[in-house]
Length: 304
Image 1 (cartoon, rainbow, N blue to C red):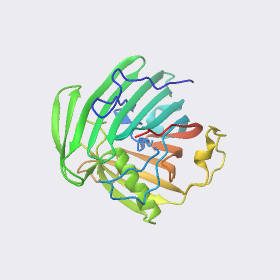
Image 2 (cartoon, rainbow, N blue to C red):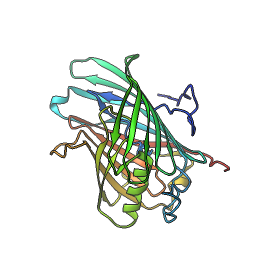
Image 3 (spheres, rainbow, N blue to C red):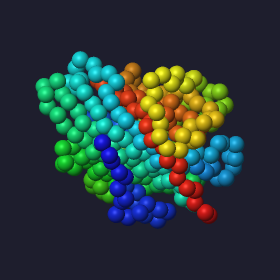
Image 4 (cartoon, rainbow, N blue to C red):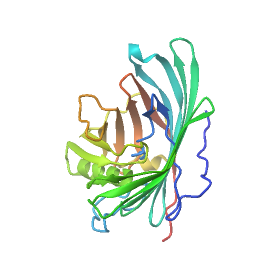
């Protein structure tokens, strides 16, 4: 399955909206992450990300385009899912003033009744390097029909201060972000800092634009990296994977104010110090999807 990251109608930049697309089942979101990765994933970067240019000890995140093969890892009996397969492309692009994260996921699902359906989700965001401004756009498509589309922006008054998120799609809506809220790239940078410092856990409030009702409380557990057994051969710029510290990081995403026994979903990463994830496991409770890195491309850094 070949998928490309379509350029948004308006190129994300310091003064334009970003397009972020998310994939959902039962309104579950496979994207976030990664993003952290996301994104990632988001994840899914290559210069210093500074808080007011004060922290210079963090390792640079590497701008890159990563392709992952995705397949079903486990399905609980009540999930109704018997097979999942597809591909994810996660791209992190550095600009002089911020980071653009683009993600696209195409998956095919097979139910236990024989019904098959496809999903195509795209996510684009732009976060300034001071961590104070985020623009985002999300689109979820199932069987060629748009199921969900979100677009908006968010700003914080200062590091650690409160802020405000505003949506233009699916409807005009605005709400306050509580003090301490982080945006995804800043969150990833802080989690990597915790890992380097030897911390075993971290918890932050994170807003990424993927939901209309506010931020997630994201709890991270940090441990040793998993063994690289049965990993696929990675093509491309594999030098990005060498001589990097690595950790196993498991994120649990809770709705704000809900610290119950079960998170909305969990994301486990085999995460390198430069922000590249060698593998991901997205766990929605009823089923989990495994993602393995198969192709990697280094992207240029801007001349600022």
